Length: 384
Image (cartoon, rainbow, N blue to C red; front, side):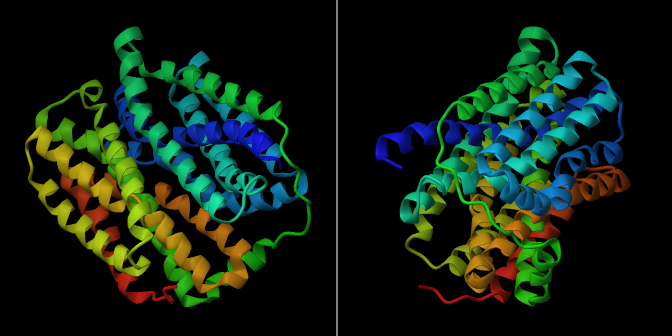
């Protein structure tokens, strides 16, 4: 594509990364739904599972579908599913419609995460492609940062957080229409790996460990997002509305961490960065077990987010470098590992219920971090 045409085509694609970040609103949404429908800690912990379970079920099938109908059409399909999901609870707000909305948000986001980066590769290659993908993740992080702030603003203006649904639906519609009417160079459609071929890569012990690493790091991401406001509610007596800004602090620091991580990873070895950051993250978690100050809690939450910001990309790249001959299969598997966002939160809330304190949730997060530290020392690749 000509340079001018590439820029025109990239704009709606980058805007779609903003839609990708909507999935992280589930953190603060869990607290609101818990309050609105008087759910227990254990029950509320399954709400994120409504979103992230679909990454395990649909990631590889979405890749197979993308090969049949093309990348742009697959992205547009994800937008349609997201719009439908966001409209349902606005017109009929109850626990069932919220669960349906979370499920459709997860389905749409799964399809989007599988198809959006390959769509970028239609327009760019080499270093330009890497740079564009990194920029897309920053935009996604900015969206995650804005979500809780938008919810808090809508509560202040209209008295209810669920007005965020039509806002997200409208933004997604604009994104979809913009991409629909933007010419994008079509890719050649061909054969893709089967489900069996994709999962057969897990026979490689190191790839299995890295897959579990993706499960752990996404679970940590979703778990801290959810836990940030709960700590303020438990320790300081904040209402859900008052604590709603806490996830934005986490995502703001995570965005800064992504910028810094991009620069550092160009200079230091991937495994060294992995070890140092995960050791730092675990050390930074320890004070959260006893801190009682708002600013102290938010500071340490933010620092944990900063330390963990680039770990998903690190694990993903390690898997690719270990088995460059299985790039397609590994890509599908790593996206499937985002199911970690459906696994850790129920464990966190169940243990919190058992212990009658949010420290139970923090124990689960620390266990996941210990696994990632083990992984950082266990898996080795050649540094080039």
